[in-house]
Length: 80
Image (tube, rainbow, N blue to C red; front, side):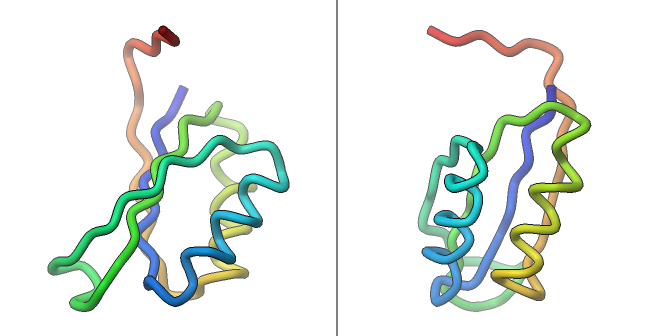
């Protein structure tokens, strides 16, 4: 299991979220500002299987070029 963290421009966040959700990904959306893109950003958190990372990356790249992806390994994943 991976946690994909996408940092996208605010103006392109809706399109990215819509594309991910349409493909069955569950997305948590957070407003963020800071050093990566140096303007208003949206951070998208997506819990996905390792083999799905590339597909999610492609979707976000197509809808929000220039975004940042950080993929983290999850040792423990528990749905409550």
